[in-house]
Image (cartoon, rainbow, N blue to C red):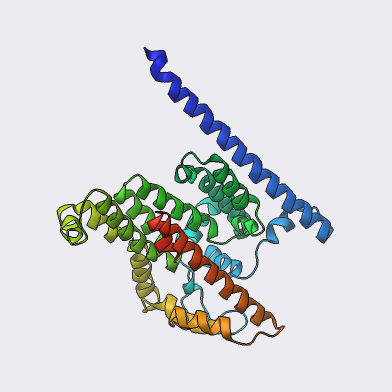
Amino acid sequence: MSTVITAPADAMHARDWKSATMVAGILLFATALRYLVFAVSQQSWDPAAFVEAFCEQDCGWYTSIYEGGYATTIGDVSGAARANWAFFPAYPLLVMLVGKPLGLSASLAGFIVSTGLIFVAALASRPLFGERLWIYWLWVVGLLAGPFSFLFSALYTESLFVLLTLLTLVALKNRSYLGAGLWAAALSATRITGVLMTLGILAQMLRDHLRDGGTLLGFPSRLLREPELLVALALAPVGLALFMVFLHLHTGDALAFVHIQRGWDRALGNPLEVLYVALTSPVTSSYFDLIRISSAIAATLGLVLSVGLMATGRIAAGVFCA
């Protein structure tokens, strides 16, 4: 009898180990390939230089948080009216927890943490694909070895953001709303867009309610009858709220992460209007015009794919990505 019970569990355990080994192999291959490209192009086989090569653009801001915490005044080395308040704390705190005790540089600590997080993300996403194994492995290859996968080894939030998004979606798939709320709380402490997962959770709750035979008008009363649902929704923006409290105590401005965007000549606006202007404005050969039009095309494609997710029943993912 015990043999009958334990055999399926043993088979599943072996399958999990096999999948983890395959994912690790893909990740190692992709990392080795990037290292080879770096070595050939830069005429250097120095591993430290390879790791440092990942530190570009916003990596410098995360390095400033890693080395000295959040600034108390505005101004960077160039004299611009900028500060690292625009960058949310969950990722740099995690990198500090790993790197500081070991005496690692910010770039190396970020490389290790980000690479580890994306490995876990590839494994954690498995339940979202059901029995469609070939689609899962296609996703894993694209995630770990795709043209933009180098970002998942850099001192950037992308790896953590992807992992927390996937964990939230897996929790929602299992109707673990409290779990989803907790993961979403961490997500909202990682990037400002993470707070939008609150809408994804709400949309999934509504879908589950309707699939259970409930009505649209009866949904509010169900929220009130089941405290777990309201707690999950309340948890989702907690990460953002805590960061705002910190900024208020640290700088005197709870919205410093918004106001400091002026230093990059950014301002809040109607996203549809911004997208329309980006798509219809004349395009020259300048770097910024090429970035603008490519970003606008990517955003449009993202909206189309988000609608596709919702149309195929992936409500939370579609609402969040839109």
